[in-house]
Image 1 (cartoon, rainbow, N blue to C red):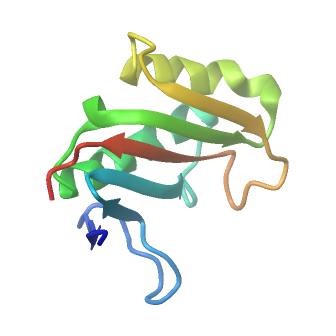
Image 2 (tube, rainbow, N blue to C red):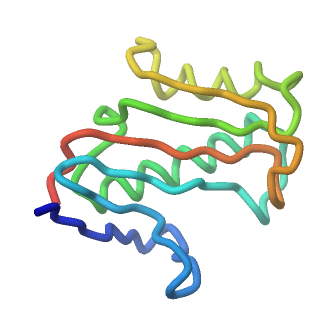
Length: 124
């Protein structure tokens, strides 16, 4: 039987009750829902920094860290701005040791970029 635990961080606003969870841990794998930087100003570089900070907080709440991340998916409003996102990605994952997908999604809601992540071995 799978153990499912909701990881909640005081630094990341939770969605309205009953809609979704920001982070679920299932059998030692943390699944971070799509995070945005809605309500903040800036380009893809600035927004990616905000989003990675949210992901870091959620993984800490799950007992993990950015070192546990194995997969990131990013949805960019405009693929021509990939370099800005890629710069921040490189700051967080300089060894390039994780799997990732980046797609252009011209309907990203309320921001220029949205990201989700999967991390292995959080210790809830």
